Image (cartoon, rainbow, N blue to C red; front, side):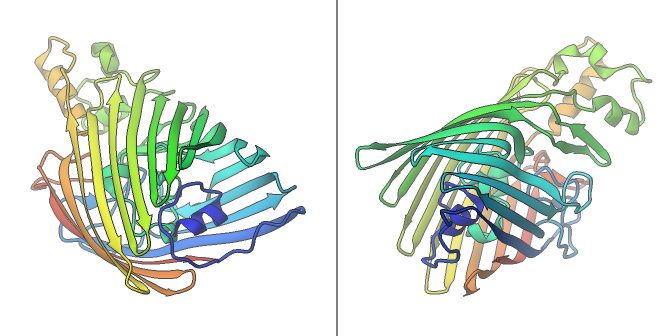
Length: 406
């Protein structure tokens, strides 16, 4: 329900429309408006050989027992309207994240000023917009499916930045062209291995996108770059795995595997068609790393839905796969085997087939049921957690979710 994401979360992206008006117009005079959103979700799979997660920010996921931690969350937002052109936005979300807790995190905290209806500046803590629809991916009610496809969005561990962005909109032909530039630093950390986190704080993020909207069509081209501020905790991982190097720093033997001050580049194309009962989404992305420590990857998905009154069935297919270049060598077979093992943890090669339905029980309340058939190779381990011997790359995931806004 993209109308809701736009009104409640100051989000410019349209993901789905239902035709209801949930919120009053923002007043011209100063005031405070409070909103909330949440998901009560339950997920399980048919295997304990690997755990299903919605994205890599989650250290553990779902096995054969039902769990609420994959999709459940609760968020609150306050909009302080200083004038019709200036407002402050605060948003906090409680969800299962990197340190295995549900402690609330400040996801948005920015000041926005509209110099004109077509030109805006924001500064503070901002949600990341690497991909189309990515800025509202935590708001289950604003998304048609239970969760955005993990094959496409799952590798994103950057949820927000401390920085600035500027956007401008221009009429072009029969539609509107919108551009945005953003820059900032990450305040986050990410799971690296069980019990081990990677400090992303201080990593620099810059990017831009162009949106074109005409009639029922929206098309987006985007590009973002991340320069990592800290080294990946490879030595900690090796020490926890039996210390095969006897305390010798790994990068002293293979310096080309460094991640600090190296860049990752994210490029994407997104197309959405939303007219009447029909909603179709098509996305492609490409991720390239300067460091050989992570495999480059490509991903994409197509999702189609048709609304039948209060019930909306949908189906989709997604694909993700990695490409590995030549790995640096040390001249020592044992060290080169460790290097290959480290890079293999970033490999993905799988398809996911999705079938689901959404039932809008009442205004601002939706019930969803979804089945995802993940079909991949045994080497596809990047987008899952805690894979065990015998993992064959295949799992079937069952999900139920109740999404709400207030």
